[in-house]
Length: 346
Ligand SMILES: Nc1nc2c([nH]c(=O)n2[C@@H]2O[C@H](COP(=O)(O)OP(=O)(O)OP(=O)(O)O)[C@@H](O)[C@H]2O)c(=O)[nH]1
Ligand SMILES: [Mg+2]
Image 1: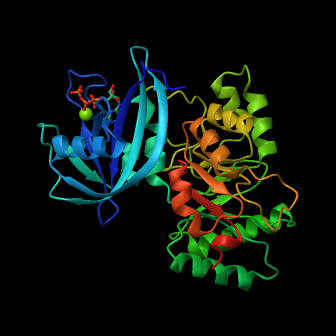
Image 2: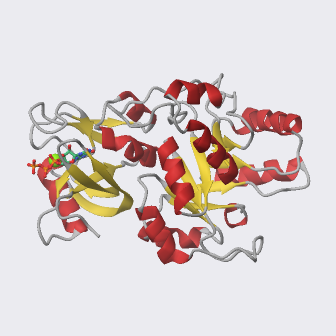
């Protein structure tokens, strides 16, 4: 299972009370020298992961970790070495972080992360650092006032990522609704929309159905990246974010937190692999638990969810029977967090 030649690295996304994140610059002479990184280093033999995290942050930054949880676990093969980047989110620490080994360190907002150059493996880590732990998918509601009241409650509950999922609407009516939601909640939410092509509104992301994911993946096979990008109608308003990750293996990607997020709905290993190959920013994986809306669907269960999350290097939101109560279990199996319709619709 685990390859003994793969180097197990613990890295930390450290978030302060204002939501800023700490990055450090790697010395010029080391592997990936001169690039920015999330502080951390190699786990020692027989060392527990949390102990390794605490040790590395004491050595490199002079801080004592008091609160942390796993954020993302990725495997990456550089030409000269293979790493497992075991990334933790640190939300509590004692002491003032400083470059204890002489390295420059900087506190930056999550959007500013896009402006720094990181090693190639770091793209998904940057995305995980920028994405919240709850992803609200709006339920079908009969009237717009009810929808807006629910969105207002979501905003007050601190929800920041929302998919506007209104079924049975014409494309025109849906587009008009999106514009009213942007006018009312544009600053509060990262909005994700459905549709046959990439949305044209600045900052609004596109959430692919699994059928669209498959079509997009098939169209991309054997095509140069430009053809792919042209083929899916790259967003006009938001623009395509320049990838800040050196040598990122994601030709033709539409994603980028500063630009337009691209997400996909996945249900199995095959769809997850397609999403990974397309370089989407994040996915939902469902159904994890039985739900009233899909009583016939066979739920994955937590252990299968864990295996599937482990098979890809992307932030995964678990969907299906999720409420905020399931968050600790979702983190435990390696998820970015939970996605829900009713479970997050206060
Ligand atoms: N700490 C850290 N390492 C990363 C990141 N991204 C990434 O590809 N790596 C790779 O993971 C490995 C981590 O090694 P490191 O140099 O930090 O290890 P360390 O602190 O234990 O130092 P050491 O060289 O003194 O043993 C390097 O090959 C580095 O290129 C990141 O964001 N943070
Ligand atoms: Mg290090």
